[in-house]
Image (cartoon, rainbow, N blue to C red; front, top):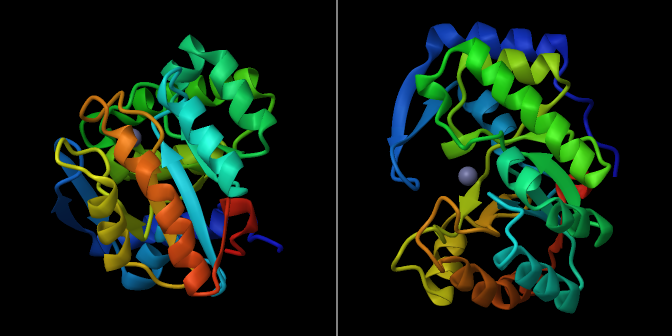
Length: 246
Ligand SMILES: [Zn+2]
């Protein structure tokens, strides 16, 4: 399925132009979380809605030497591919895990270097963080990422400008499993995913607990089979963003 080109100058101009209409919303996502809300159609674009017979499965915060290999094993058993939004700091520390994700045929994407909220950072610092992570993740995996998801889903004008300059498309999510919480269980993760489960949705989960409650990845792991069954029941295929047709 052909995907739209990377964030073009026109797209960025549109997004930047939307700043006049910006409002700030807050969500309870791992710590202090906030999302910049923009016009509906642009927010839909950022949420990564794709073709109506497909669900994009994405993981944040890896590669992690303990949890990521377990997630990879489960994805192999379920015969599905996903997109991994990697942290540069984790890829730097565990390049062999990052490499394994790529070798398993999953899509490599970018989540920044240090997992800092862009809302409180200068454009210069954001640019340094994104450039450093792009170089680190590309070197570790041999793949140049095409997509970027900012930590906590916080997008600023500096984020968008840097993403444009680095030819990275910003992608947030349409549904999440809230799998970072201490109280997370496989059933709760599945139920949370169901709340906003629609054809074409981009799903957010985590393959690492490095910014979450220790061990929370086990709930993610435990929910994956039921999640794929849910997609099958709705005749939806599961795959990475490169197959999402958006
Ligand atoms: Zn994250």
